[in-house]
Picture 1 (tube, one colour):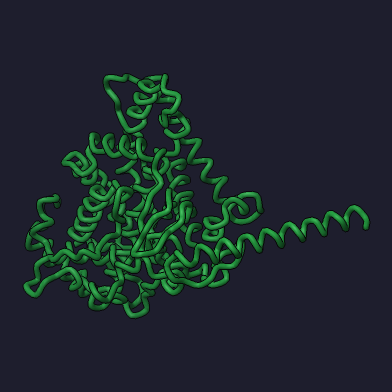
Picture 2: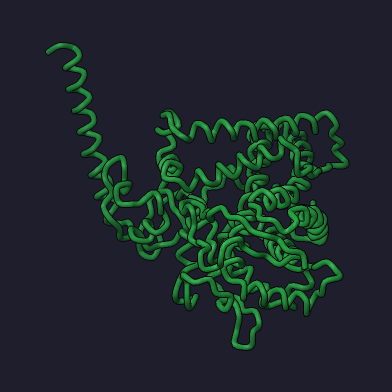
Length: 444
């Protein structure tokens, strides 16, 4: 046999052995795992899911919801981030002031449209991003800043990419696909620009750092780096500074701005709901003073609408993947160490046991018989457990203050009739992305 043929035969034998071993291991584990379809070697259940609608596919092939986290390395960074962001006002009165300051610029942008149709995508993301920018970078950006707009476009495209079929394949097979050509190359090249921007900011802060007077999140991280420079196991080094800041900046921009964009689309679809919010705003706040967080308990209908926007929008239906750090017992089953687990939050947000009409946008899901706001234990868009979204308090404040400020000053209209507005998602994967649309902001 020639050398090439012998090599091919050897490769076939090796692959066959690996397939037999993989199948045996899966059969052995399946007896302990929760019920589900039998996975194929190497590709698992890939052929049994629709990557264009990953959430519904996973609902069909699995029924347990687990949130377990590997965070030996993430724990100190997360604890530091929560403490630092709180010190800079996340969830406190100073955060409210930051939001209201930025909302002023947002309202000016809306007035500049002069009631003409416009796409609200970047009008909203610029404002939301500037709020988190003031915390992470210590300053806001001008709305026409080209570098700022480029970053916003990068984050939007990345957010959308995660919900495409290709993006989901990359998430499942990143070890292989990072070496293959495809649309992920374009996305990651653009993300390098965001990384370079943050690196440049960090180095500029290094040159003017006053350890006794940190100006922003980056300064606080740099101080922590100095404090732990003798610790060989420290997680506080420049690369982690860049990635941690990028995560906060990205997460603080795209999820809230997309939720607002989806929320406005829903109000355009249902003008009778928008009208009820207008009435409550006029009754509680009036038209002459700006909203504040003390108003929220007095505005049950508006609060219910915002909660329903988050529930219906279901921004991260699969939440974030976790990896089991040790063999874990769950409801009588064993989940082996190393298993990747998705909490599938969307299954809770659309659970008919907790929401009367789960597939319908209905604020009544959060109102009692007397029209007062009622909590629902199935409402968990920010996830749960140790790795819940630590930007939850800031996001809640942003959604309330920005939306009420807009509706206090403008009536929102669609250039097309409400019955023709499509409120179904444009993409549903690891994120839910609404269709792009145009709207008119008519001053009151």
